[in-house]
Length: 123
Image 1: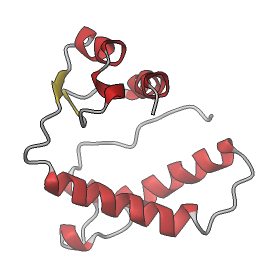
Image 2: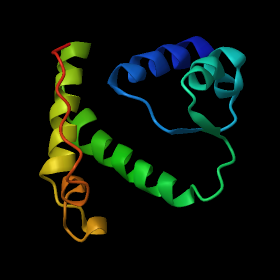
Image 3: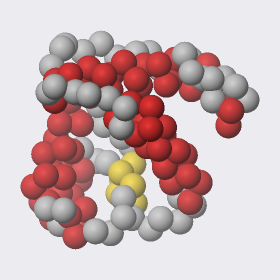
Image 4: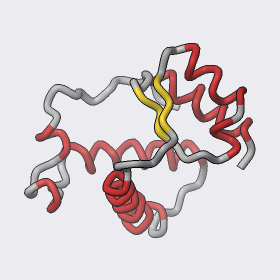
């Protein structure tokens, strides 16, 4: 993967906020000075050690598996805008209405009630 694509994705993500800590692997795209500069400029801590992250990976892998099998593979999207809208609906459902066995059949929104659904304009 090239740095330019990752840098563009990072800049797009900053439109919605920023993390306190950036955690990634040590791939060349994530260790390049061009990619690290915007993180440092915003005083975001950078972690690439991977220690203690094994469980984080399990949860994100489960999320991506659910997304692929429940939306992407059965879906038929005419455009990127259609896919974007479908992803928005899916994540609202996933976080606010779908009970999760690993969370005692609660939703993520039940566990983090102070996190509101962000308002955004249509793509």
